[in-house]
Image (tube, rainbow, N blue to C red; front, side, top):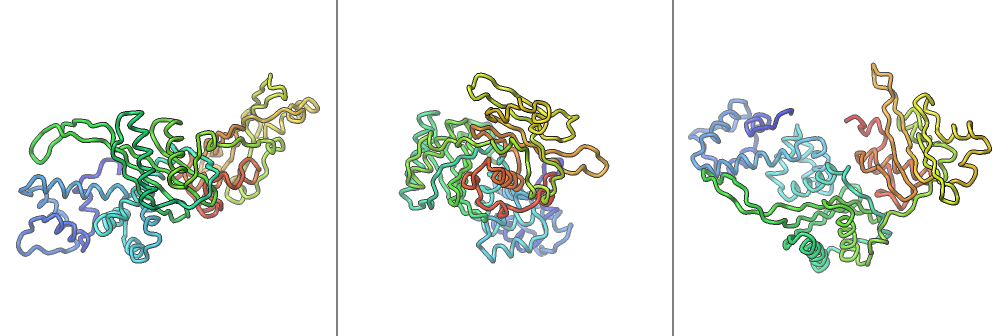
Length: 413
């Protein structure tokens, strides 16, 4: 919805069923004598009126807060997260399938299976912030140690880092979750510095002292030894999280030098791009849009870009056509960086082809984090086919496990 949902909106869009009845009974909402739980708009409006006239402000606030909490997952990405969280729970899966909307599904899980709801919320957080994630090749393929001592040591390492850096983090909560696609998700919540916010508690206005939550997540694929991290604070913080994870949950010391993304070989781009699978997936054109080349002695660098009038020809082809024997790509110059364009057919009524641009450097920098999970996995697969990435450098060893086809995967969703 374009505006924020009120609790009245939520109630009008939820069915009046056993789940709603359980929720209201759990919060001890006073009901008039002879109240009937009929699934009708009139019943929903009646509940709205009863909440508005609740004699105890604190209890009314808890009901409203609970209704709003369920909306955290009431959207398509939240739906995916809920099904992932319940992927190995047949009865819960059937319950989710039986719901008729994302809102009903989220509310049902919130009321009946709060632990699964929280697990789904962690998955949704990672997927929602996926464009901010950094990917790391840990070079370690081990099962995660889930014993209390390992979890405690991991937590202590994070607490110690935040206490040294920011003077906070004396409390840290760690959870390890299984994702349906074969990766593990480690969610961490650390205690930030205390704040005093002016808030209402019931009918009293007062400054409440509390500590915000520092939320960080790490997703790990044992099959490839690759991890993704989301954490505020820059490269130093990402490195800390990876090092603590490797040392305490994988049992291997891995310093920052070890977990740096390895150099990538862009040599194959000298011949342009030939990826039949990309055409099968729905792309209508592939182009090496630009390359940055460096002379063998390292003293000269050229940046070459195909112009819009090149009709999607690869810049590597243009270099061969215009420079012949003087082509730097055939004279030992190395490709240091490149932009690869993947073109889709124009949308109905449009003439311009939508384009997905992948930026890659020989130092291992990629912009794949900007794309959603399905598209990112596809693009990783194409880079593996080109020989730029190795199979062990991607998060998922089998790109098909995250869904196929750009058009089906929802580039424009």
